[in-house]
Image 1 (cartoon, rainbow, N blue to C red):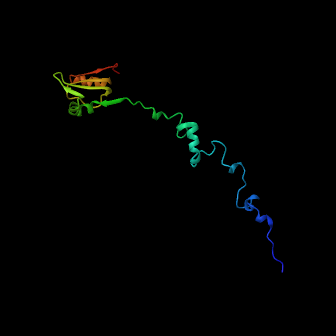
Image 2 (tube, rainbow, N blue to C red):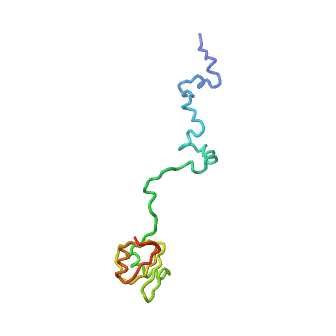
Length: 151
């Protein structure tokens, strides 16, 4: 009776992959994982220390031109409605004080906007004021002292 003799090549080291069998893809450039910074995306934790050492923290995240929405004017603004309703709080905090001429309010970093009504005589120190705000305060007998020209 004849027995089947196993080929010697199947006993070689790495015999299952050395001749590109069905179990392993051929190791060409697509499976190598890239050279240098290739593949430094989502799953490249092993490269992060190298990246941070070479490029610093600016490598990750968004850079460049941002949308116009992010460049908003961030000057401080306040409406007459808010000033009128918070006069007592301003006096407690020391932002305002009661005088014979009316209530003096120090809002030097703010632009005063004209939304709301004024029912007290106020002298407001501000960086800027809208025309409608200045008119409403003047009509109530007060004034807005600005460091810039009125708009």
